[in-house]
Image 1: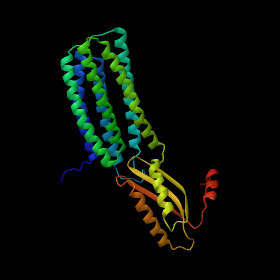
Image 2: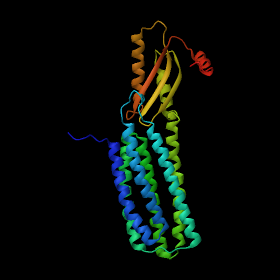
Image 3: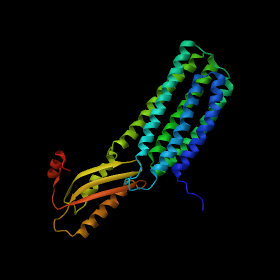
Image 4: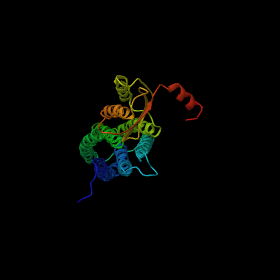
Length: 304
């Protein structure tokens, strides 16, 4: 029986292989033609390859079962991967801007326009199908690493299109500075796009709450349950693959523990239905009365 490969791992393998192919083609075209835009695209693809390989490692670790040392699993490594990926993308954007400014100042001619245009059309076609595939996997798995990869290659799709437009413009007008100007614009766009990836990864690492609409739904579930008198201390977070929810719910003081667990099971089932693609760890706490003020005071004093 063969080794089972998850759809997330398969997606990173396919994206890595695609990026490696594009690196070889674009670097050859960029170096031979002297086009800043094509060279910028080649550098971006080389970083795509490195990042996709790192993403494979991150997903592999994130999918490992919890251990005695990592009792909540290693899902947060996806946040680390997203921050690193966004940073690498930003650095590539800065380098592209540097090369564009250098060409504007020193001048330079773009050669082999015909072959370069054909290569960029080929690159756009491959990247388009890769983005569609990654978005499909991201929707299916709700994995932030695959989502980041899809966003990354989506920016590549736009930058490749702009690169193609730059080459065609130079071919038509004969003005080589157009290539540098478009390259500069690609660099700025890449840095802007990377900021979203960095922000999403940082939110995971800092235990940011779940999206506002999901938290509102949890509030609604607790509010509408007829046997929950009130609730407090609702807290949520995610590690990218698993959503964590905890809360205190006030029940009748004389209620049997069996009944309390029945209510908790009902609430947990409704919360899990908010996003069936994610795993959920829900921790309810049973209170015979509302002790929110007491808990807040103890928390403020560092007692709990």
